[in-house]
Image (cartoon, rainbow, N blue to C red):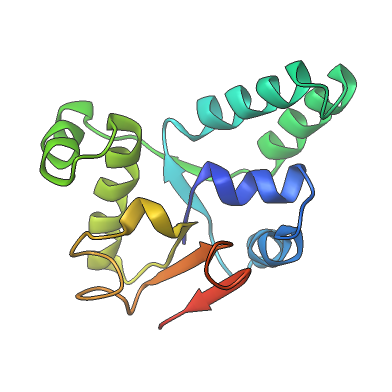
Length: 151
């Protein structure tokens, strides 16, 4: 299963989506599923944790524990050819960061993996709920305040 930083942040920075995000992580920890992410995931998560610390949402010691917990999850980091993300970023008018997830999502089609991410990333893109809705699971707080799975 492909996971993005936003889902993991719901685990570590509690909010209304925490229980759904915890369920995804529990499946991984219990061995019922295997989480994968692009190589930029640790940097995205690290930056978000640093921003939460700077804004006073968490303390420095909490930030350290979050990073340690993330590391202990042993999520498989999938290396990618960065040049391959640029055409996707251009094609779908997304950032290079988002294109890394899009590239991994396209690859996941070949292996029948699920993708857990914020729905807005895939909005208006052919690999979203239309042609490939069978493998993408969305975290969409704006629409349903919960998980929407079309598998």
